[in-house]
Length: 407
Image (cartoon, rainbow, N blue to C red):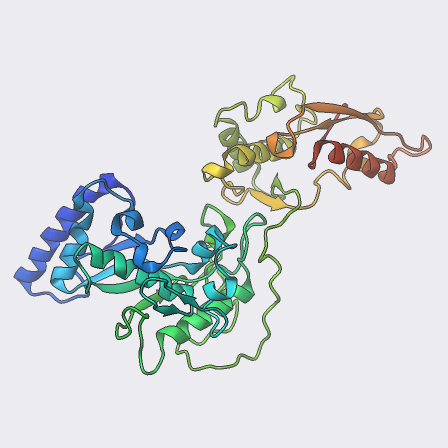
C-alpha cells in the first residue's frame, strides 16, 4: 500500500479524498489488505512531558485549523483499519533531557516510574506514556478504539557533535528493550489499553549514509551500509544476555566546547565549489568577508573559503534547521582547524597575522591583529608562542577563532 506522509495542510484535502475513494474501491472489489490507505503521522513530542490524559488531539497533530484533520482517523475507525504513528522516545528525551530521564526513554525496566496525577495510571517507560497520550487525545474526539500501528520507532547509533545521546550503547539498549516490550508473553499493551497489542516496525535496517540533515538521520540502522551488524540484537526478544560488550556512551550530555563546521578532506572540488556557492547564496552577508578584497579573502584557497562559508551558514541558520553536512562535504570538528597548520602556512611570510573572527558563532568582533614571533634561524614560527596568542585572544572574546594570514 502507498505510504502517505501527512505533513502540511496543502496535502490534506487530496489525502481525505483519496482515503474515501480508496475505501469504496476496496469494498467494491472485495480486496483484502491492512488498510485502504496507510497514513504516517508523528507525535508532537514536545507536549509529552505533561500527563497523557491532558493531551488533546489538535495540540497533538497541529496540522489543520479545521475539523477535516479528523477525517482520516474517522475512516480508519470505521473500517477497523490502522492509524500509523511514528513514536520516537529519543526525540522526546532530546527536547527535554532535564525533565525526562534517559533510562525512562530507553525503556530500562524498574528504574523510573511516573504516576499520572489524574488517572493514577503508572508508567514505567516513555513509550507507554506517549502511546497513551495518543489514545487519550483520540478518545476526546470520539475515536477511543481506533487501532494503532507503530510505523517507526528506534534510536540513533550516532549523531553530530552538537547532538546528544546518539550512540551504539543507547541504540542497542533501546531497540533490545522495545523488542522485549513488543514480544512480551502474555501480550500486554499500555496502562490505559492493557489488552491492546501493537504491530510495529523498527527503524531502520541500514544506516542511511547518504541521507541529508543532522547526523542522527544517518544513524538509525541495525546494520552498516555494507551489511555488517552495528550491534547484536535478537528481534524475537528471547535473548537475555549478549556476548559482546557495548562501547560506553560518551555523548549523553551536550558538548560544551567550541565546534567548527569544516569542509571535509578529499572531496570532489566541483561539488565543494557548488556547496560554497549555495552557502554564500543564502543572504545575510554570509560570505562577505571572503569576497575579493574582504578581510578574510586570503588565503584564497577553496577549502578554507568553503570552511568559512559552512561555519558562517551553520551559525546563522542552525536554529532554522540548517545543518553542517552539505551532502557529505562538511564535517563538524572540536579541534581548532588552524592549530598545527600555522607553521606550514607561515613559511617565508611576515610575522604579523590576522585573527579573523569568522562569524557570530565565533564572536563576530572583526579582525584582530596579533604579532607572532619566531626564531629567525627557522622558517617556522614557535608553536608554543602561537598557542599562547590564540589562547589570549580566545579568552578575550569568549570563544574560539579561526586564523587568516596577512600574506
